[in-house]
Length: 368
Ligand code: FE2
Image 1 (tube, rainbow, N blue to C red):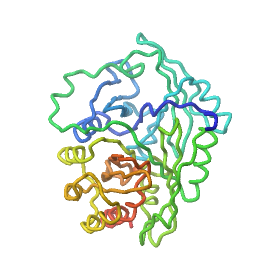
Image 2: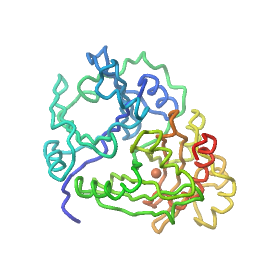
Image 3: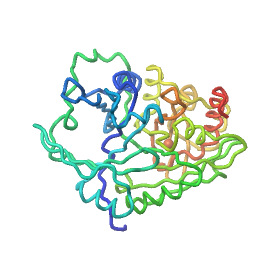
């Protein structure tokens, strides 16, 4: 294996910039089963923004909202609506990671910075990725607070006992970016050269096309394969693809979906449906064709059909997945729930059925 030019431990957290973090935190807690563990805002001495830290398994989401008209990130809300601002990567050595990235062509946003409070030392530095999305390199080995300077454990009075069902979500499996037509290879190149990622697999429009929607996708992986970032670009179709719809409503490239890993997708999806999470539905004919396409599986086919869970198989095993509808009014960011039984792939065999389902939704929005 080649020398790791950019040793990354893991995805530390995903930061969302949203219009009303307090209400978004309620949604992610009660719909997806996250625990709200920390808060930053006026009460903790932070004047500029409110932040909520949500945890489930090894997944950390940060929801931030501006408190004043002069917050430097306010333009994001007009341009993009709610969305992913930053995918933070935990590294051993922040200055080294930043220096390597800049030397290899990244654009800096914040140089290495040390923030210190009574809980210790928190180090970070930020570079640009696709669109307005950024990557922050963080190290909190010497920080013993609940999250980062400015954050305190959430007031236990803020939320009552949980009435919603648990999500059973364990890890971020992959995070997908949509970029403009013709820009996919440039971003694959960015992750390869700047971040030292390697390319896993690619699909082209022969794999992923329906009558209307087509896309191209390549997957880059880093952090010894633990971090997977598929990158999509629109391909020519007869009508407007879902990627173009995203680019229009997000106002440029950005994170399209975050896939969250579970060890029991049936239990997870049953609970999330009870919690009012809306998922895409494929037609019943999908399940008639399933046994021939994927062969024997452990799960009961009728249960999968009832919950709308999709299955795909490759040489190494199979995987089960399902996609939510967009989680904001703009048809932009959505989530995937995924369970792996050997397969390391992304569900290529489901794309056609899935895109037809997405197109039915697009037709309802008048954006096909
Ligand atoms: Fe995915």
